[in-house]
Image (cartoon, rainbow, N blue to C red; front, top):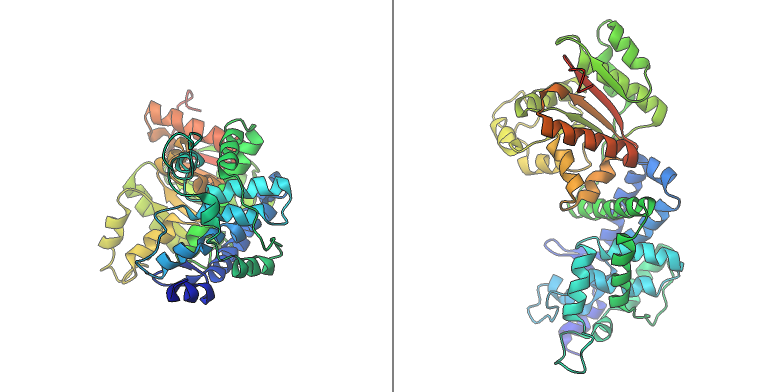
Length: 422
């Protein structure tokens, strides 16, 4: 063993570099986000028994594979490392396999941990390409020996970390058959019933949220409070606003321009919060200009509480253009940080185009994070009449999906609504 190798065995285990973050610190940062997710999306636990316990275990185990000695060299910038672009999440499976988790819990945690960076189908191909081949007796060795690579795990301090969170792990790791595990995970997910499929989606989304937000240095996720709705009661209420404020469940509101539909929607939202609990809010508009105006209006009405975000294709340009405006809330602020906050769970209200929601239905990268944010949430759709037939049909599909699978409540409003659209 070289001097560097001896030193690496005694140094604190790292999870991140530039700047260096220890493994246990990263787990703690992730668990901080985990605790806030439980308060932001409590309905998931009501829907799926044991969801939060499984997510907790997934968070604790997800980066333990980084205890591979060669990966530690890589994180410390040692050029003599022999990591060779392996996947650290595959080595986390050795710790899960050797733990005191039940067999069922191991299957669930393996699914989340293995898939928190890459799709399982990608990992299946990666394993077959790099860790042996069924024709090894005929052809040359196809790459690494997974068992030999697991022997390079710095196990003792990793196990001590896991014990701090209530998980016992055998000192001599039980190396899993990763080809079989990943193949089974791919097969089970493709054949899963609807309930299991969506539980897997939200579990993966929860782990990704914890990992990504913690890695970005985010420590606080804001929540709407009752006083954030006070602006909607500033003036005497119209009849439709009174009705909206007393209605529980999904709503279609048709009312003339200038009749206070935005206030009406937030009065409805307050009633839903009182009835169903808090959730994240998506205020959906068709045009960039109207999104910018609504963002500024809501941010002002909620006392510049930084709870309002927005997402559209020209967001960076919009923020840059506001940097010289002394009256604007983000003046002299960091544009990149604002962009990051708007795109993450930091802001519980987002003003968006429908495309920002529709893209998750196509399974694009990190769609699980997006669907998690919908759970138990609220869609407020303004100017629903403004979309062409094709996009309108997609929005209807989105609403059906969100109501059925994420318990989302819907408030649709417009100045005019043709009967066939209604």
